[in-house]
Image 1: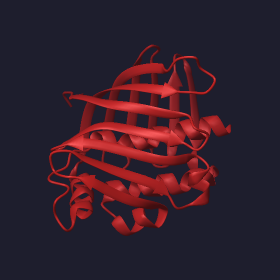
Image 2 (image 1 turned 60 degrees about the horizontal axis):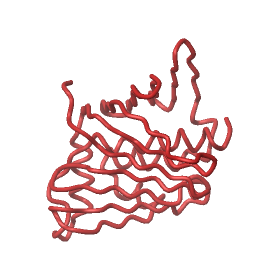
Image 3 (image 1 turned 60 degrees about the vertical axis):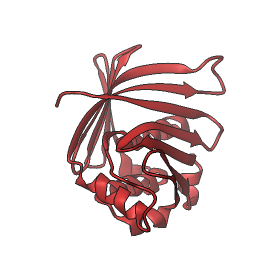
Length: 197
């Protein structure tokens, strides 16, 4: 798998944050613990999204939209509906990408540079603060009305892919997820309405 595809796979993993709601996050001594507890409590979600990907080789951002699904403990699905249908599914450490009649399966264990990102995802959804902080420096800013979560990799392998992940929200809703890649490319995902199960 190329470095660009590895970065794309890593970016897809971060979409898990889009599926989770949380309660009052800041303004309490244990705001991060409350956030992680809320993430761990969510067993299923289905939301709309729009995403802009900014690439150095492109003159304008690439826009896509579709649906995100999460089923605990570890199944994530990104259904891109526009501009071209494509589905990415992460389950049990295997990433499956389907476009048209073509399907590609990648065993993520074969790509150790992705392991820290996978662990951070597992740790976040499981509410495992200790495991999350082994891989990332974690900072939570704001208050319950408007908050921002900053994640910067401690691990050198993860830092070669992702420089920082920034998640914003208001009240109990995620609003945006921005992924800044190590090479300067970045993506900005906006969470839309909740969809029927």
